[in-house]
Amino acid sequence: MIKILHTSDWHLGKSVCGKSMIYDQKYFLEKFLVDIIKKEKPNVMVVAGDVFDKKFAPVDAIELFNRFITRMYKEFKINVVIVSGNHDSPERLSVASEILRDSGVFISSCISDLYRPIDVKDDVSNIKIYVLPYFDLLDAKVMFKEANIKTYNDAYKVIINSISDKLKASDFNVLVTHCFVAGSEFSDDEETICIGGSEEVRSSLFSSFDYVALGHLHTPQKVEDNIRYSGSPLSYSFNDKTFNKSITIIEVDKNTSKIKSIPITPLHNFKVIKGLFCDVIDKAKRNPLDDYIYIILEDKVPIYMPMEQLRVYYPNLIMLSNDSILDVCEQNKVIKDFILGKESNDRAIFEDFLSNICGIKNCKEDLKVFEELNGLIKEE
Ligand SMILES: [Mn+2]
Image 1 (cartoon, rainbow, N blue to C red):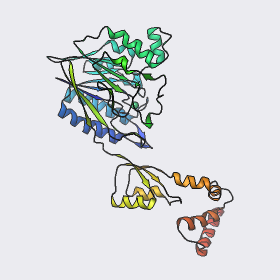
Image 2 (tube, protein in one colour):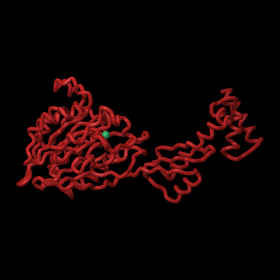
Image 3 (cartoon, rainbow, N blue to C red):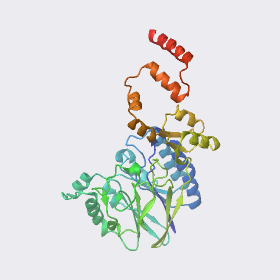
Image 4 (cartoon, rainbow, N blue to C red):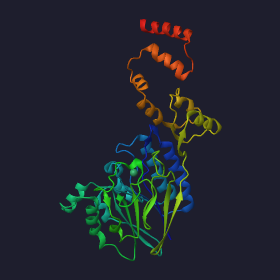
């Protein structure tokens, strides 16, 4: 039996709401995934694109990748097959890839890599892993001299047709690629993908493969039983449909396969909390959390430094919003003008601060101190 571990969309170096995810990514690769590898002992790991979040990946992300890949070769001796995704720089990701091939690390960055499948064998099974990284439509047009390649579906059709006669029924044929397959579910952090547009690829094109390891979409899902997105290992948005992430394991015995997914335990969960400030802070005091938190306040009055107050209990509170107060401002001309700074002066702002935030009205002493200090500041 041969085991394939399928993962994708690591997006190493990504920040969410200004918070770097590098510790979470380090935890995923060096603790969670290493534990799975020790337990499951896969023969090969496929990474279906978007290793890095940016074409110019930060140094700590490159270091983490380097350390992990080295360990896969030295400690676990498993083959690693990587295709570049739309977030990766194909040239940077595939540095020294010809030499790395000899060590069982296959990094693919161009269409022509498809014609060099990777063999993984045991006594009964013969797996051929075909790789097709994310590519530019123009590259496909030039390579196949086909002017009528207008969509990714056209390109995939031509590209897959060009190897279909090489696929043998006696082999277990795997394709690793990074694209948007029609009919899949996406989450809000994937808004750049044009759904229903020229990016869409039909799953019927993959019918000659025994398993298709997809990357691009971050929600783990199967398009068909043997055509799957492993999804990203971490949530990268509070708008994620499901915060449940997983990796996929395919066990191949001759020409049959068994597929299972293993849920990922993240270092931090993503949580959205909604409510009035008093209830939210009450809950926070009773149950402090170090998860990544997004709080949606529903108060119709301004709250004094809510982020700072809540961060005492939620140190990883990374986003806070209050649509209710925006609605109030929109409806109330006085508040709107005040916020926009119309007809207000320093004294009026301070008076409003005293009454709205501190609940103190007409306190002559406070106003006197304010006027004195304000005068001094202005003199300076
Ligand atoms: Mn991605």
